[in-house]
Length: 489
Image (cartoon, rainbow, N blue to C red; front, top):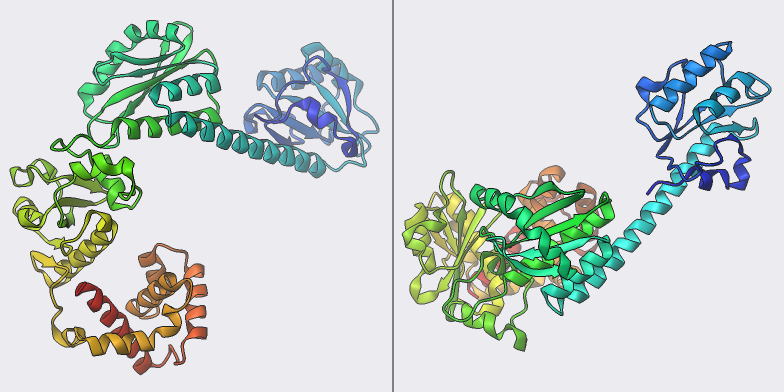
């Protein structure tokens, strides 16, 4: 939360002196504003420490009362008067009005510039934000540890962190976990809202009042299907730190509800996305159930763009194939014998890209290969391109071990570098964009300054001149020769 008025007054170097309002030093100061207007309230949001030198100060007790009344009505935190600038001291009429209306009044000495007060408030706000982030990270760490013990431990930990109550509900609104146990009595009040959210078919959240408390209802599940709800209730506002904690709990509980099923059951979309992104390792004993739920090896990854209109996921041609929509792409997984690429082509009409058959542990690489094949399908106006197919034209000549050897020799300084992936990717994007920094950076998904730094390093490592068109052609062919070698597997 923002620093208090008392914390600012206790800053020795500012030399501030409180003239009235010592009973409200716990008021938060959300910002510092400086104004010499007779009515600054249209430009204030509330919660400010307002500073003025009285350049346009209206004379008379009534004018002072009207001024202070407007500030109190705008709910500013305090008023600071810079003495020794226009007036030697705080006007008595102002001091009387501030005391009458309960507005904290501060004497700001001439030696203290207003900017110093603003800087101190900014420093305290930054410190508070840092401490808040530290508390949030610590709380999330504890919540993650609790997740290792199951959903009940997550609910208990979240309720303790929020100083409220937590319900973990099924998609139908039945109580699965309650923290504390007495929180279960709130479930009935949530039935109507859960039915409304379920009928919408969307992963929508809701906020509603239950008695004197506020309840936040969040859907759970990583795929399209809602697998349950998290309800959080508290008699107080949840600040940004606590809201972040609730979001972390939603993610942890969603992953828990998306645990891999037994063999033969449907593989949840959220799990498939994690596999394709490399977020789930398959080389551990704990992943045995997940392996059993995957199609039999060797498997093929096929990908297409998500078309407008109804999703092809429900097309009969894709029955039995695990599928996931990631951004604008639809990815399908299946055994080689089932030919998921052909099934996806039947469901969408193409274009479709497919990776070569491989093992479960190579799914992230297979996804990248399928997406590159999709790019080739688009550029050649073909309905289906498999990554193992040999490119045509002059590039077809690169499908040769001698070409691969020459390519590795040409690019050896980059291949040997510890950041070879970044450097090779930067060089490819730079050459493909014909040296246009913005285009190349956008293709890579990095800032153009990052790309410039990488290309500078490439220039230092390579022997030739990147501005020489012949050398650029050699580099481009070398990159494509390596890619062709990867196509051969």
